[in-house]
Image 1 (tube, rainbow, N blue to C red):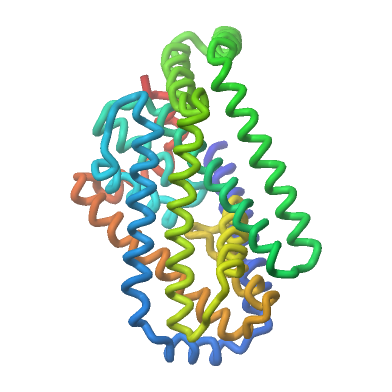
Image 2 (cartoon, helix red, strand yellow):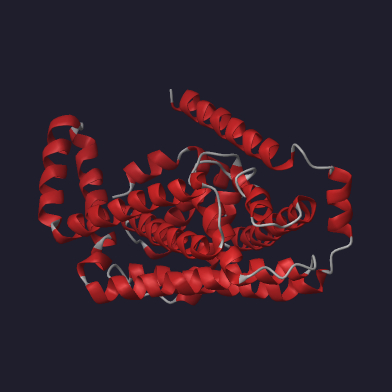
Length: 338
């Protein structure tokens, strides 16, 4: 049954990726796109990569901040795990890189699996709110059709609703425990009850950041730094193609692309990231130049972090077969954590 659901998910992801790729590239002359890639000035790649990995470094410190209630850790210690998680998201479907870094953190630091997965959800929540903010800032300066505006409003409603839910759950941990205990006692076999209750405690711990307005603001501030750095990479790489994109356009493109990555797709967000071509075209950028730029930008967001993640993975002593097993059995690992 699990294999059938996984296969269905892969099919849906392939269809979504194929549709968005066709929308982005279907009307373009690919030879002209390749010529734009070939003629780019790749001297801008090095500073772009430096800024990108600086953003991953800040993400590691944000993760350390979210985890400090469970155990004080440095961002430097968490950086390899963060990179391996990104590698997993780029190589496996269903964002299983989050499961991989949760397992690695449990293996290395004995931190509750539920805590790690909850902090990953909290990270995605802060990321989503920041992307909505970027889109709204972009729309103040870039006139676009009503569809994107409605999508931005819908995204804002979803992420703000999730934030309110997390705030409520964090403020009422006793209710969450009571509901979980009731459901688990009535629906779960006895031998699984203790591990699941331990997982619930991890979730409660992972939401602790929302019990303090100051800590919530710090986490959001770190998220802003992360994404301003990452959009800095977008801007630097655009210079390789002779583009001088205004800041509102970069924010709009980054926000829209990364909100779309919430949709199912092939690993590495194939197709979803390429919607940046259409977004830039709507703002007046030549579609062929936009395609050359977006394809190179996507490759620079994929290959370096995957290569570094594989290096850290094998340095950690994990075989590729074990990583594949973790990706395929991630749900079972979460349940078995005690």
